[in-house]
Length: 180
Image (cartoon, rainbow, N blue to C red; front, side):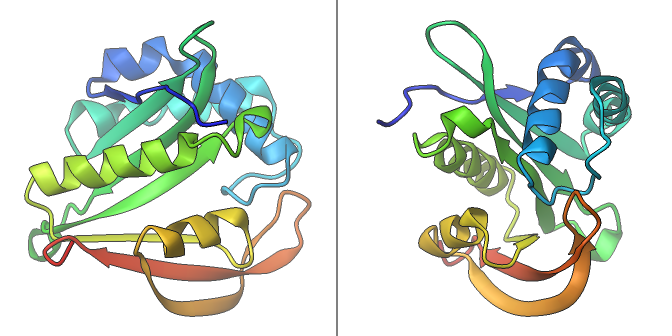
């Protein structure tokens, strides 16, 4: 079944702060499900909420944008993705896609694809020409990026750990938007 949700772009610090509890729930669920998104298994809601709240200045100054997909029936948060723009002058044509995550019971319904498409479309609209990201090698996310035209440019063994602390390889991707 495909989801009919449209991701909502959170473009201000207050918009992000209003969604912190929902974003924290998503992050805790992703980590509990074994996703390698930068956190360890002991992550609790308070820690996840503090991390998201710490992202508000990045969103407020325009260097970061967060999208949140909600269930069209009950409004429950289903997934999120962020776009972080490069701050250095020689890299302002590029951004990084980060923290793409979908609630475990909502996977396989098109939410991740909708979130990624929203971030890519925003990047094109802003005139960005290059996106980059990394993901756990062998993960469903790796297959999603390949299907969406992202180019794999390397794998680093033991780059990041899973939530239990086991080092895993990370695959790095880029997407040229000028050729998209």
